[in-house]
Length: 400
Ligand code: NAI
Ligand code: NA
Image (cartoon, rainbow, N blue to C red; front, side, top):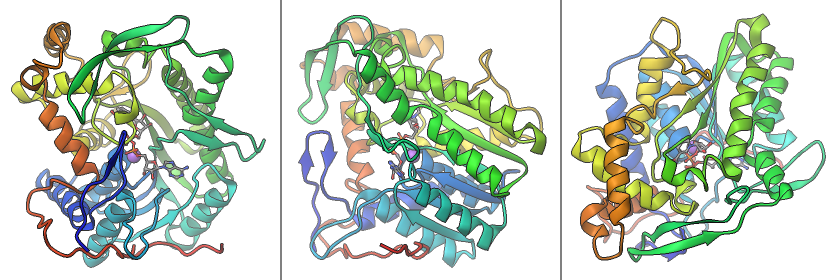
């Protein structure tokens, strides 16, 4: 069928399989162009189908020839109804890796559940024995804690006071003022329960107990800091509390892995257009100024450039892993450069609907957003009939 974007609010209801495949191919080509790195050979990526997690899986497979297992939560296609984008990304990745003789299998289900953890451990035992690297890259608005049965929902709110600043609706380009009331204690706790480190620690605990962590295994989760303009709603808001918890959990996990000479890190990544970030107020306006500035300075990176740099210049250099004073890996170093942030802060002051198309990279934002769903990708014929019923070659069947 002919597949077109159908927008609703911050999401797109359709996805294009051929556009997704082209995106994956482009990312693979990028990693290959950088040459082999000294990276891991057996890798588990939790949150492997889009954004930073997909880039991690691709970097591991094509940077160091790794066997990869991916865990994700995606909607499968039905006749006349497209799958969610991560389904098509994974299908393209596993088709290509299998053709290239690389092991790639995956599990589609709720990573927060006991069942998916057990299924993943069983698959590692059966096929890989152990893993050397575990990437934790989940972004979700909801989590059911398998121990308590309680379902937690995250919120994106400031803490301690009302927040008010500029924001943009990137579909219309209209700049307006958004006002968000502060979160209460329960909302803070719920957000930490969803996006903090508790589930990451559960994964590592269960994998260690099952003996599927190799000696010297490394685990990495992704965090964000960002500038002063987004601080009240991001780093000092509810999501920031969750990131504080995630970062603290890296130390808890590292201590638990000491006896197998393992490591646990948080990597602070750059702000990028993903399904997760486009739902956060203020961030899209910031990203449009950031993209404009970083592209002008020749510093712009997408997920794949970020993660390739994480592997080749931070994690697998053969030497110590460089970290900041809080023990975090920083690949947001170019975003946070003084000259970049000074330029963005200047642009921020001028932000309005009339000037944004010139002062901000709204076009780049929109293009990246469409690209997430496989649309507006160069080299794809969108007038051609596309097959929505794509299968994922390495998808593990589960009993319903
Ligand atoms: P994304 O939305 O592109 O990816 C989320 C992944 O999690 C997908 O693979 C999805 O299928 C999976 N997922 C969600 N719920 C799941 C569940 N219940 N069970 C199994 N899989 C599930 O998000 P993105 O942006 O790549 O985020 C990944 C991490 O990177 C997050 O921790 C985010 O905070 C962090 N980060 C994001 C930045 C950004 O600007 N996008 C910047 C810095 C860090
Ligand atoms: Na991800």
